[in-house]
Length: 228
Image (cartoon, rainbow, N blue to C red):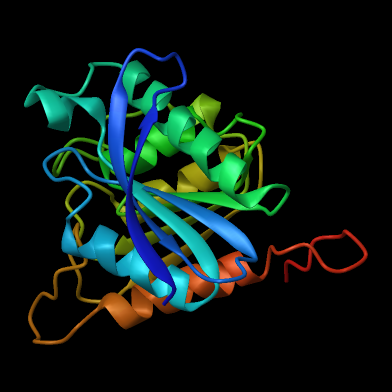
């Protein structure tokens, strides 16, 4: 799985110093920056497992804390501070990886932040894990504020029992995006992919969806995408 080490880096604006954990395989072929959800941090089990699994696949991975975690505060209302933090993490990734492709993955609120930051030139694609398309059990609430900012190819991995994302609503919204997006549904799973009605580990299905999608977007030797 390569080297695991702590890191500290500034936000893009320099307004905050952020902690992270880097999972660095010996010869990385891509990078993955992972953003946590609103009520957790870089030590969240799903975030940690994604980073470890990516590293085992030869992908350099960074999981980090948004600044409000360090100050025991709250996320900004429009997620602008969190976007600034993510862009700082992307700069660290770029400095470590040179020209290798960089993806971002976000859990819940972290996926919204990834959408906001998607115009960053470092980002090749976005993985949204449990995207909160609307408030809990309120699919009638339309127009996610960060939706217009989502300008890179995206993969949505959603539990079919997620109260924050009505699947029919999501399927109707995806064609409105500026770039192609794919959807993988994890059966009998909730917002954090917790199993519902059965005892099982849903993470392998989440991981397979992510890795298949990311691997399909590595540049080929002639410089073209190999996306299927």
